[in-house]
Length: 210
Image (tube, rainbow, N blue to C red; front, side, top):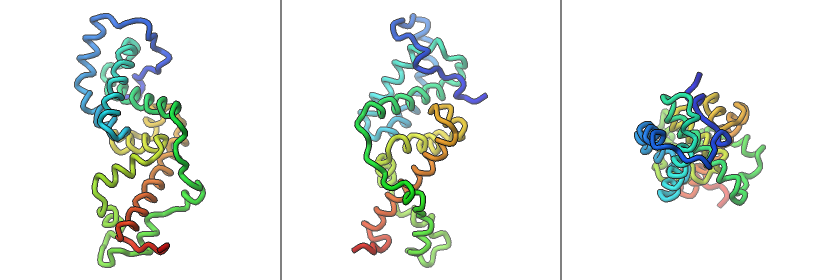
């Protein structure tokens, strides 16, 4: 049994029934210690402080209403994270379609490792791929990550920030494991392609299109 087994889905919650004082007190005791973690996750998923704060607040409102359905109080952090990530996907479905990621077959063929190896921007390096990635500061990586469509960004953030397994990701996001693996694969490809274009603009590698 995984941590995410304790999570209630939105349809299990009756929003018309207000929580009683004891439920609210117990919820606050369990949930408040995890608010900072929720905010850090939200800022990685949404980018701006205001959007992250709004997302955490909405998560807490929804979680409080769903609290009686939580089967494992010890799994409360994973439960809160699942509600938060489901809200991100719900918002995504109601917003205008995100920009296309280009030809998927071409994307699947993209290999940052091969491009860096062929370009060899650090001829005396014993680990040229890691040295290439080390050229980008945290803000550049964050901006590249935020440019990803949320369908790809959310599982990548959860994989590396929450350290979840593919199975846990599938349970948390309500997707088959195969879908999770595909999204992670393409999310990494888009992220690497974005960093490669950034490297060309900064002159780290040659831009053969000029």
